[in-house]
Image (cartoon, helix red, strand yellow):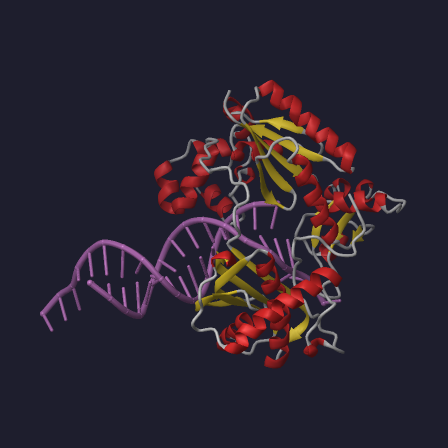
Length: 412
DNA sequence: TCTGGGGTCCTAGGACCC
DNA sequence: TCTGGGGTCCTAGGACCC
């Protein structure tokens, strides 16, 4: 009786969560039953498909596709805007519920988790998986897939077998029958670049990869090749990780219009830095590497990073360096997207004495903490920098800190 | 007005040191 | 004169995931 791993995956997560939320809000429709997608705002150049309903899928609509393309495939397509706060809440609620079955929960993404059990027989595991799937549906109003095996890779592959609202097993003795028959691109970590390479070598199924020339795969695809070869045999030696510290944080944003001057770019970078630094502080981390990314109007991408002489979580320290890097990197081409990232993180509990820190920087540290407190209590935009006042520019660009949201109604 | 945003991990090449 | 070799650190860039 070895360990049992389950993989829980919310079916069309953003769409399902939106539908469940609308139902709770008393909105009289179910977007799951019509051709619909969750899609960004085209006016602000965020027009892509983030999730699709089962009926939309029948029109060959795919995640990542532009909304224009999607509408060409299905003229009556219903496009619903995303609500990330709902998703963060829903994800958290599901995660907490899953913890009631086992403390060993590994969060894989906003809509996927792994569970570990050490004292279950196969039959008991399957029974429990059905219970988890059905109670989530009952309690939260959306469906999930559950994959069952004895390692994470196989559990995840099992969960992908047939959707939605299904439980599947893929134990090692089922690999030949259930895994090897699948197209090679269905294997975890075989993406759009690797698939054509494998196809060129006559490898079209996972079984063909498993029985291919290991030397060829290993020398041509290096460590990635060795990994997918082992995956094809269902071998996964990764450890089960609960509560791993984060390794980097960042925010990027496609801008409403192309930016062509330093001043506007710097303001956008401040907005991105504020969000990134806030999230860094929320995670109780300091960073030593800062990085800026620029995507130009033709989608060309470049990034520049620098290791600082000290660890910091201070908005000002990060911002100053981001601007220096940006000025060094930017070639003057109109800018479509900007990004700010920090890495080489260390817990702020082991705060080192920073001999490079000046007086202003110390004052800014205190200021950051005060601003964080006010924002947590009264909302994101309760405090904004002067440069953003009376402008159309958003004071906080990019994603969301994944904590509680003030003023939000109790949903899900 | 076709093309988002959050991450992780790996490799390669140059600088620098002994 | 024709070119050591091992190691670490740093930066750029690419592949993959959801």
